[in-house]
Amino acid sequence: MAFIPKKRKAINSKVDAKKAYSLKDASALVKEVNTTKFDASVDLHIRLGVDPKKADQAIRGTVTLPHGTGKTKKVLVLCGPDQEAAAKGAGADYVGLDEFVQKIEGGWTDVDVIVATPAVMPKIGRLGKILGPRNLMPNPKTGTVTNDVASAVNEVKGGKIAFKVDKAGIIHASIGRVSFSPDKIAANSQELINAIIKAKPATAKGTYLKGLTMASTMSPGIAIDTKTFVH
Image (cartoon, rainbow, N blue to C red; front, side):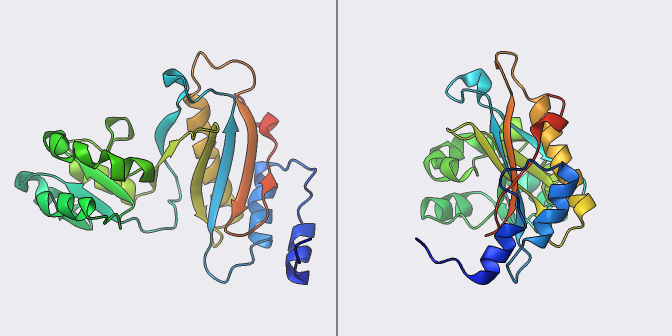
């Protein structure tokens, strides 16, 4: 059996593995069981009753968290010279086109979000193999392919996140930091859950929210009672 340090045992004992907590209680408990010395991410893992192989059940979307993510996101805007000033004015970290296409082809992906104008999409289509697996490929559905690059940058910097169901039918999303108050963690979580419920496809049968777990980096998972959400 793996050795578990006393501190870790004490932390694990605070979470009842057989209990499904309310969102309010989980948001307070996740702060108590954090063991990291840095400001750890608080994540939600949401298991859905969908078949991601079916196009209409491959849930994806965006939501603006009312209290932000607690992380300053690095944004790259791929655009023509006519849009560069607007992108820079909105606070984009990197702005350009050919230079960054070449960098990405060379393996550079040191950004959190990439925004592109429709006009440049033909040039960056070939980057899909690199950007797709990292969820960085610009997409009209997530608002990252747009002519209004300033608004897109402002939204990302203001707490807008994208979510996408994986092959196992689970959505993983960071909704804040352990330094957030329990109320802020709960409010951000509720906003994400609402968006996911709203995205429920008409063809999904049976229970939609099958499981909901909250955890911070390296902390035990806290099960949340899905029955408390209307879905």
